[in-house]
Length: 478
Image (cartoon, rainbow, N blue to C red; front, side):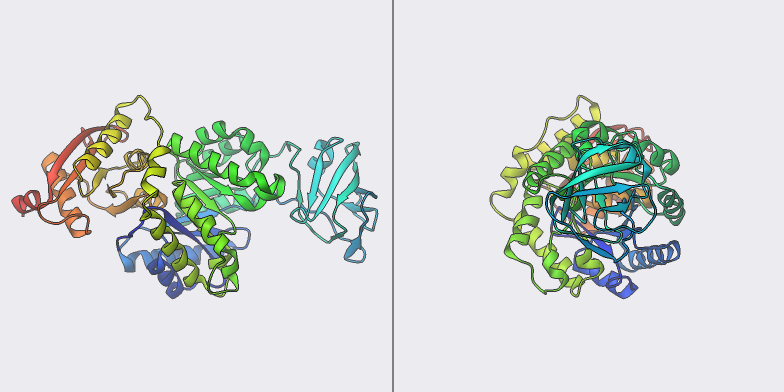
């Protein structure tokens, strides 16, 4: 099944979409990869979901990527004697290490790392920012605050710390157990939540050992401040706008989204835009006009993928949400302004042979109006470089390794095909032309451009270009 658009759709699985039949419907509606949220999924269910996705993959004959999203450190206050307390602006409220139920003046905070790290002047945002506290003093055992905004607090509400750099890694004990489980299940991508610094990625990479690629979720101001270093150590980025909009001013999020998207594109790393893209479709069959514009902006920016969360996981219209996102993206990519915007944001290639080959392939393909760029890629690197160029023509990534094809299913403009490795250069050209014909990327007489590494089966050695006629190349060898 060939997509008519270049941006990919990542759909979250949940109670509304976990059956094999529904997963197939979501794929047919436009989902290219699926996200499993480990905050709400135990290991048994996760294995079941992976098995169902692989069954759909086999049925449709297309590689489908799976992203496991780890929960990360969830910081919450304790419980209150009455379950909920009313607060007044300007009053003093304390978070401390006393496990007794809270009242209108204090509550237990079961996170000693926060008690030790918060300094006077730091903000503490409770319940997604509905309550804002400002620290007046902290002695390592209690944080005395002033209520700046909000009028109530209740049991187990989340705590965000936009001004505080916590001395904790992105992986909790739960995350480590979940990471071992998802790697054993064979997921393709692992997303790390609440990354603050590049070092947060090191432990996950060490555990993964290449069995899955690592995606850094950018949802804290500390991560934005060290974005370049985080990009360097990650395989992809996710703009997690939910928590980012809590920890940073809401009006700053659109600009930060653009900064992250462009930085990822310059680095040749995939970038996913996530959270509340079609939020109203959780309960309604159509989105708001503002949501349509929001999705469109991400597509115009050249993001690799756009993500549905509760819309596909728990909403009343999961298939309709995917189909709507598919229609929006497809329409944007046919807009007369789209190509100019994408081209204007294109960055200079790095001074490597592989990047020069990818640049040349795009320019030749666009100048000669070729049907497709066909890239042989074992590790996925050649595919990444081809997508970094954001060519106007389709990219067909051929790989003998199914895991590579699944990983590239999140990559902009890339149609992935699992194909046995070529025997020699003639066989490589033959396969490329035949697949272009079979997959609908060319008809007899059309031309394609082929990129590969010579000698064959040498990862990361992209150094060859070849223009071939689809019909003649195929017919000569059949």
